[in-house]
Image (cartoon, rainbow, N blue to C red):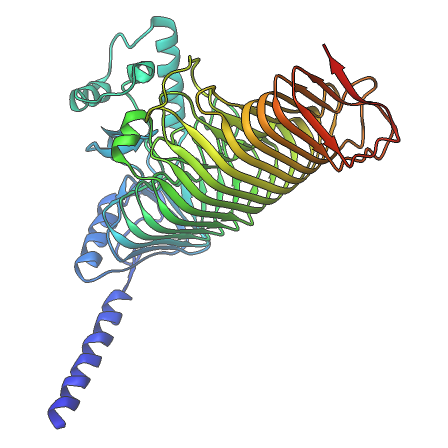
Length: 521
């Protein structure tokens, strides 16, 4: 009995000791770090992380002030805590991100500059607090512009610098699709701000992240990720802030993004899984993702899926978000040759305003023209996507579907949609589409236009601001179209115009319509 009690006490003591060790705080300023941004703290920070990891983990505490640093490598059981008034500012000297390491850049693995905050196959990593992470990306953006202009004028780099030569030397075996080879003429690739590779249990909470050199939060092949209450701000207009996406999980699983505020120079949130054969060979889908209670301002897209989606994207929910001033709202993009399946997507309770392009985009011709080809692992698939409860004003175009003949975009539904746009919603090559309780007002053209669609259900469709002698719905070269339960509540001239199509209608009330159905021969 006494021996058992001693053993139990010993076990409790060991557990308490492990908690104490795990919870150890390392005050970076007290350890000698300069907080005036005059002296780099890179070595001190990385040595402290290594020490803490060797002791079981701990928290690096940054009190108020500005700490200048190069690349930081995080390890298991490490927390970075920034108190209010603390800024971790990253160096503009490119050599502070050497040696090159394995980085996934736009879905392709290569050796290049270390991400500003990076980790490999680690777990239990946290970045939190009320302070700021400043990527100081201006030098990176300027160099990107300089190189792009040189390539444009001279069709290549005439005299590569030492860093470009270094990149070429370590990436001799790198292979990509021929159409993408031109991008490697630059021999210079800006690092993501935060890229954790194949890590588990990641949490980023509360901090402000700004001026990223490239993509901002970019976990790759990770599991169990939480991004909560984070503000991301990167300049939205050229010459600053190109490709500075906000949050880009790629080939990740079980990701929760909530209560974030994002204003950036590219897409606000993008879900990816690799590019072409590189992504298919890596073979990890991006799945089980929730995005909720976020506000997106400047950016090319609010929430975007693709175009790197060759490993697949599935089981995604997007809810309770505001897009105000983004180029696009919900955008899904891919192309022939990319492969991958995008499926099981739910979007609900979205408010949009001042959308300069499309509220919704489903595009299988994103970055190249292409011709039909036999169905194979190169064929992209979009299916089982459902969007509901969306309102928007100040929109350029309500939406666009651009499918491919060998694999039409299929099983899309739009329910409870109310939009005011310059142009309506167009759909070209799709199957099993449903529009239910949809009210779209346009300044020109039809509210809804369909070409080469099959299995189309139009239920309770209307427009509160119909145009003179302009049909609300146009259907061309389509099969199995059902028009049902429609009641145009304000007068209009033409409700449905169709050509070379099979249309069934029933239970419609068109007492305020001069010409309910117009058939064009």
